[in-house]
Image (cartoon, rainbow, N blue to C red; front, side):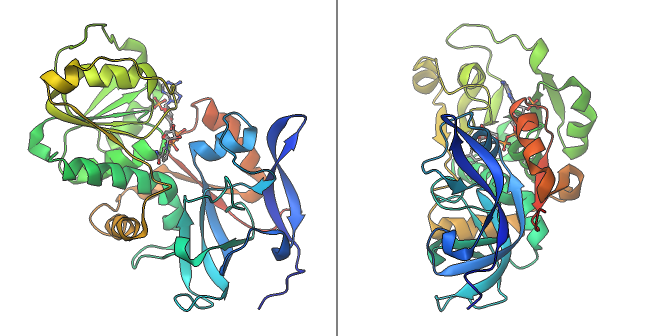
Amino acid sequence: MMSLNKKFTALQIAEVAGKARGAFVSLTLDDLSAGEVVIQTHYSSVNYKDALAATGTGKVMRRLPCVGGIDVAGVVAHSDNARFKIGDEVLVTGYDLGVAHDGGYAEYVRVPAAWVVPLPTGLSLFEAMALGTAGFTAALAIHRLEQNELRPDSGKVIITGATGGVASLAIQMLAQRGFHVVALTGKDCEHDYLRGLGAAEIVSRQQLVMGSRALEKSLWAGALDSVGGETLAWLTRTMQQDGCIASFGNAGGIELHTTVLPFILRGVKLLGVDSAATLMPLRLQIWQRLSSDLYPKQLEKIVEQVHFADLPQVFPKMLAGKQRGRVVVAIQAVR
Ligand SMILES: NC(=O)c1ccc[n+]([C@@H]2O[C@H](COP(=O)([O-])OP(=O)(O)OC[C@H]3O[C@@H](n4cnc5c(N)ncnc54)[C@H](OP(=O)(O)O)[C@@H]3O)[C@@H](O)[C@H]2O)c1
């Protein structure tokens, strides 16, 4: 058993003047949430939810203080569970990690064994976090759409918030599988980036005319939505017969104002995607797919690595919608 007194760095979110705020602190293992498995963190990542949590922007945190970071990949440093032994490479995403259980923005993380996923064969710890919750969500959304009969010959698939982490990964995964991918983005300077990932068409958010009829011209066989709000409402109105939408994001709002007409006159399906609560059998299946048929072949093109000390600078950029692709955090001591 490693020493309980050894000090290490963590980005802890605590209440400051009535608002949740992230700050570097020095902790010992004894300070961390309980669990059977201690992981020495190699990498974590930055998801939209992490940015909301660390800046106190959304009511994401369910416990304070709490170490942030909803993703972690590293090596088992201690295990009280027979399924894991010291030195095993593992990852954890979601569950309560980083919102109600001390998370991945720390040199050590202690979690229940039931949350731990063995690193899939063929993935490195870095790649596991380049994918992270974002990649898992993209793959889960695609898995759900395919379960609902979406095929490359069904028609066009649109991805909103296209330069974001989940969307940048989903574009690659779908393009590789032969889908005609349409990217909806607010960043007119990133059209080449999106084409490079495999988008066949780009729609500019600034030039998009959404209309207001209950049913607009039918355009999409499938949709993956990072944005919510008016964008998701527009998607419901523009899906083709039996079209299928995977709703996972709220970067543009949480409300949804639409009518039942897309559902009862076009058979549109609205599928909710919740990565954090995915049960372990499906979770393992999705990670298996991420390391094989859904592995995005241009992963390195969309990933930026930041030092732990520079992590706080990423959050406001992400909330302002100015970040592109994925950010992996190399976790080491911050002095
Ligand atoms: N349900 C789940 O399990 C799950 C899992 C992961 C993520 N999510 C959610 O999915 C969304 C995307 O996550 P992410 O990690 O990919 O975040 P991200 O990297 O910040 O991507 C979000 C993208 O949405 C677009 N966007 C931002 N603000 C917008 C606005 N006000 N109106 C319209 N578009 C806007 C931007 O893309 P463009 O500039 O290209 O338009 C931005 O890059 C977030 O809402 C996140 O909370 C949910």
